[in-house]
Amino acid sequence: MPATTPLPFDQVNIDEFIIHDLDDEIRVDALCSRLLLAVRDRLLAVGGHPPQEVGALCRGADLFLRDFVIAACGDNPLRLPPERVRQFAGHWYIVNTLEPQADELAVILAGIATCYAVLAEQSLLSPVLAEAVAAACAELPWYCRRIDDYWDIAGDGYDRWRAACPLPAPRA
Image (cartoon, rainbow, N blue to C red; front, side, top):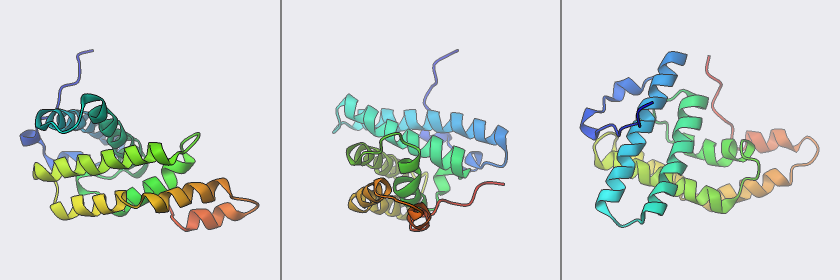
């Protein structure tokens, strides 16, 4: 199988990231992988981050985009409802990670914010969306409390914990 090549920013068609069915989900997942490689290449080209840090940032964005936004929510990652970051970090990450940890989540959130900043810089999404995503990514103390509260759940407390940061309705 040939290596995946980055998707040039000038070849991105936002409407190609719309998901209607499983075939679309598979196609969008592949497009998103290629788009993340372009983000990686852009970060390496502009400098400011060592390669290992760029890799960690892109892995964080990858988890959010491909596993949550695309697979779990069926959203177009370039037309993302801003509340998805909060739902991801304050709920999905916690219940879908064997040992959710604040330091790991901080790296993931930095990757999400960085990715959306690059996409806005490339005019693939609005600066307003990138700012909303960055603001949600900056709420690490709240997410840390959510992790602590999760470990402290007793009895029927899970329903209260879940209601404080509900996930989006399942796709039809």
